[in-house]
Length: 298
Image 1 (cartoon, rainbow, N blue to C red):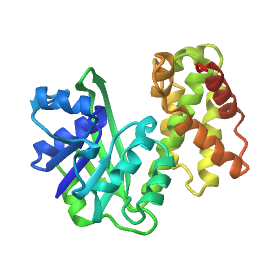
Image 2 (cartoon, helix red, strand yellow):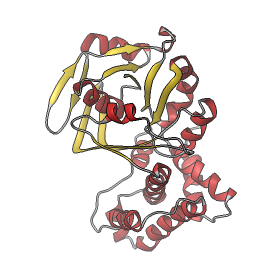
Image 3 (cartoon, rainbow, N blue to C red):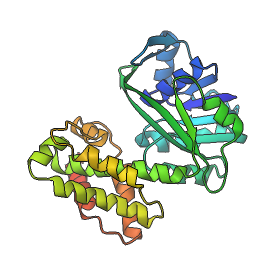
Image 4 (cartoon, rainbow, N blue to C red):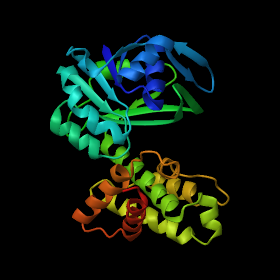
């Protein structure tokens, strides 16, 4: 099976390396600058257990139109729109596309463009891009996939993704899993971005009840959309976001604080739009969006 990893950032570089080490045929779709770096230096991936650099195969969008069997979309939401049209050159009749991003808007767009090819994907990994080096901070590396709209995960896709170092699973309700992760990330984004502090400091300032309101708001949207959060998922969200003394901050808050491109509209804006269409009140979510939008450079 020929696998195309779209993007060689933290997520793509980590999973692509593990797939390559598992003997899979992996190619990265990257921009020309990144291609020059990878051709010259290879892809370096530092995990909690190893530091390795591998030569990798790369292509850029104009390089050709040969179809791949499996496409993993691992770019950030801010870059998705720029690659959607480029994928068509690499999609054949039997190609499976698995986006590994937070939120759901990208799933809808991919299904519009490539109906019948899209599977749901959910990754759990804590990794960052340090220059051109992929660094994984914690040993957790899991990948969950599942069919959407009645389609099933092909056996060869499951076999290709099941490699050492990846806790791989196939689930029946991947849409529910995607929604559960999305609304947690949204709640975390509301909490940190609205109050501009880590969880522990917000708790100390008397914000626990507002944190619980944020969790309730986002979970209410999921329930109204037909994807109620599990009891375990709810308990985990409450545990993480109400832990006294916690230094936890969301990646959305960290990106905004650093002046980096953020997934605010993809994570919060899309959820707010769905809440309005479902007549679910989300006042804290709306306040957070106003604050973020008003603070961005014009």
